[in-house]
Image: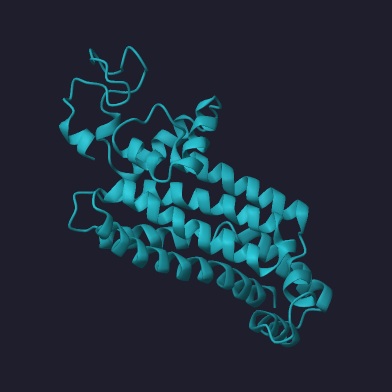
Length: 268
């Protein structure tokens, strides 16, 4: 944000060249693009490049994985043209995750009921809904798998909305637009989905892969991203990072468990 506030209006935020019209003659970014801070402007930017595929995607993914918070800082500082939009990156990742989950193991009922421990509370809840349902077991299983596979990537939008609102509350005293918290959330949860995908691929390792890729790695990543985007001092980043990491753990747990329970209810 400091770069945006200190750079003259006649200088392109993306490449630093002088502006002589509505578009930068050097990189092509629109001159007033950086000053549009509404959520609708982010959506507009996404739809403009929805069907554009170029090397920016690979460079954006590199920064997403190797430099936590860097893409968000670049984006809200006005360097938009260099990278793929955060919404496009997130939607592409969610589609990849959805496709691989369906191809690798579309039968979530088997994993959650047949292969689970007998005292697992989610298994008990699913069986309770199944027993109270008027549908046959085969129909219930089909309905459950359809509900789970269709909605696991949809319900995360609710979690992301709550997380972005939480960011707004935590940093309400700072001069951040809500849309900038949305950008941070999209980048962070894109990273989360890739880790979720790694968890699915390595699920044969047991619970350790879940703890590592769903909780531990994203937690460390979140702290580093918060430090880069929101804080200049380490101790403030530690306090905010601990709170937001714990909040993320609660939200992602609610996402997974909530998807299972709602799928069971709707399958009955």
